[in-house]
Length: 354
Image 1 (cartoon, helix red, strand yellow):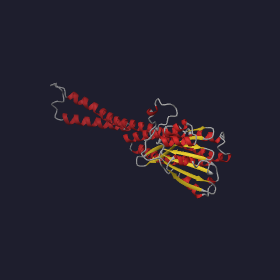
Image 2: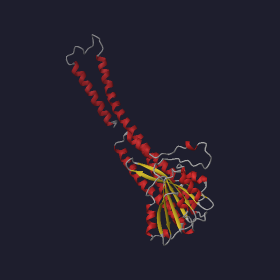
Image 3: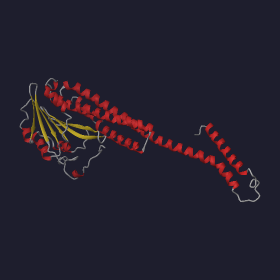
Image 4: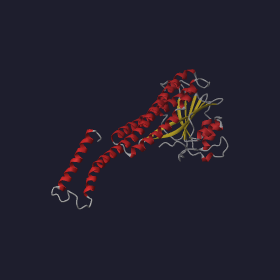
């Protein structure tokens, strides 16, 4: 299940800008990949140290630096020094519990996004924070761990047939955000299948596990909404053209991913409403099942009330009761009890009480 909050106790009392990693710790060493490209050139290199990245700044037409693993404080700190990144920005990168946002600085933009992966084995979504820094001729992306989420963008850069090699760094940032948003729909498809399966299970044979699954899915939808909803503000701020780092030719593409974001939000809201309705249906189903049981028990108890009365009357220990010495007394009483039972069953059936 998605963890809605992460422990911040390690940062308590520390000054602003203190670099402390908050999130899942990974043993792997941070991986630094530098992609240099232009209209006629492309190269991809893995760097051992952040110092090697600093030497490339300003020497190529476009530079994209991707860092997999933000748990190494020294690596993040040095990258901040080489590219003059604000300490509060670095603090936000290492704090993986950030809300999606965009902040404008003097010569770069800082964007925080949420990425989701679906674990089919555990049947749950896994969240990851992705931070992006957009400069005049460079883009730096920070991921919590190594993944192939940006593989389609890298493939387009290698191919060289797409416009991404001809456009500026703002278009590269658009491409990264577009891949992230497209992945939202893959997650929503998986969650949508789970919602449909739960709906069928709810109608056919609701169990206690059904309620647990509904609550788990509802919690995941709430977290997805909290992570995706602020993204519309981020893209809207980029689309308004308040930053000189974003060219006017990129606005049409930003409007496209804005529409995709709205569509993802609408889908999440639809699933949330369905889950809320399913919860009500489950409670109603359990209540109706209990009512059916109580109805059967009530009918049985009602039938036995007059029979108990007859048996109680003939159970009195009086000597001069008229039927006690009668030869056909016992069969007559049993027959009377049977007739009363059948008449009551016929009456209940006619009233459609069962």
